[in-house]
Length: 311
Image 1 (cartoon, rainbow, N blue to C red):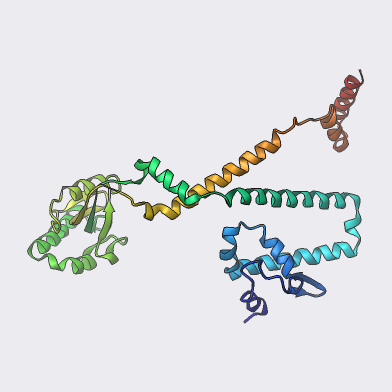
Image 2: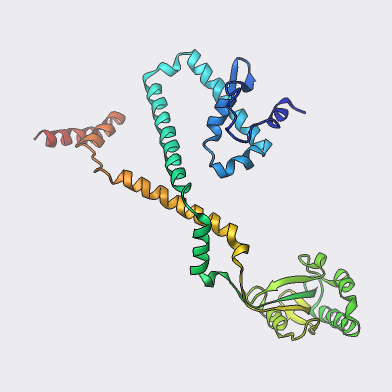
């Protein structure tokens, strides 16, 4: 087993253990990425996504390799004194500002999420939006499709009538006739079954015939659609019902958490952005443009702005 993959099997799944934080998790030449470095990198990932990420050895290996490449390039840059260049120092400062801003925003968001009762929110949403959880009447059916793609219409109808006749005499042969004759790959391995068919799910002639069957076990005569001829069996009639809360609980909790988190972040950012007026000093944009472009029009625009400002 490759050393790196063997290493991945021992990765921590939380940040609660502090011993050995400065121990290397991966090294190359004189460069190393420590456990603490890795913790800092993984902290960028939302809490709920960390464990699945850490269990995905391929993704972890990819991150470690990228961290090591960045580390070696940074070590080379420092060795050359490149990190001391004024513009580079400013870029590093900007990168630190971005990381700090992101980390702070995550912290503010987490503090608001920690006090929220998402299960209660999910239940309230379920109770106030009943129409979203209504299940229409449906039927469970099975069918045998005799396709017209590779045979004539007449030949398909003749075979479909033969299948229907055999089933009319002895319906216990259904499964073997599905395997022998059905041209529907989507249901052939499941005795031709389609469960919970609701209006609008199937092509119209199929739907009309399926819902017209009255008793469980009834079999239709061949029904033509754009796909060919179908022999349809009714397996169950399902009355309209409401999906129980327990069946949608986890989905709704996730939905409410996502909505609440987005709202909390938006409201906090809005409070920051509207706390004070945003001020762009006179001629600041023109000055910036003039520093980058020697174009006479740009330079003239800056001079005009300065003249107006001075006047």
